[in-house]
Length: 179
Image (cartoon, rainbow, N blue to C red; front, side, top):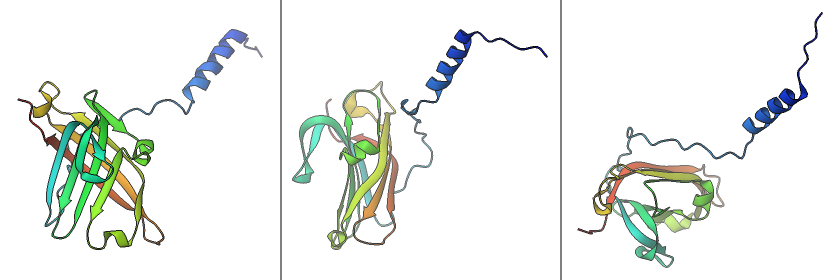
């Protein structure tokens, strides 16, 4: 029987390659958003999907954005006596973004509900993400169209209600005019 001698150097290189490839702290590869399966506006609701630039949300009133450092996207669904709004605060730079669970928990993605019984069962967003891509990067900002995919997981506090998921995948259009 013949023995195979492997130089120690090659064994060391093999172990290093294996160790690096198994690291868990590598950045997550961003998954592109496809344009299929856009979400519909809920039945009997009026929806809008808009964005504006260089703003932030006023902590006292979501309906009154103030000057800030974000590209603010918002989706709104209004029904007879209720409104649901989702706000996404993305960086002004770039033609795409991806916000993770950490960003959601840091309130860069917010959910607001207004209805007669909404405040009776408190809820909080416990997981989710938001990602977006400018579908027309060659155009000026006031003529662009962004495609966003937003997923939020809501937990109702103090109840045995199952978690609820809000999912939006839609085109967002500018709510400002430059030219």
